Length: 108
Image (cartoon, rainbow, N blue to C red; front, side, top):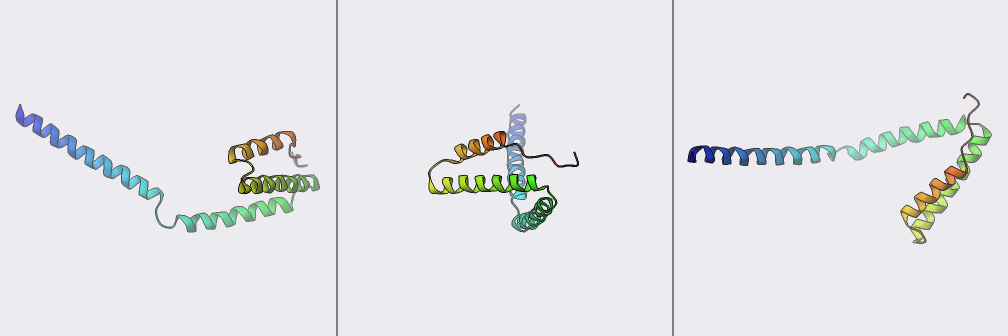
């Protein structure tokens, strides 16, 4: 009986150590080197796609996007100045989008 308890204790300890190492390895794998470069490369692609969409938009869509960008910049400046917090800014931007629906494209 004592041998069974010892084996079970050793097995449990080994299992705990291996699962802790697996969790630690999983956490470092998602934050590994190269993440910034990957994000920068994909960020450039995303900006290019957005710029192309803006160039091919209707005049109504372009004016809406400019108004949205202006509102977003103003809220960003207010957050930076400490006038409002991020949650309030997010709620205000959401309310702005709700009251100012973006125009549909002619293709839809």
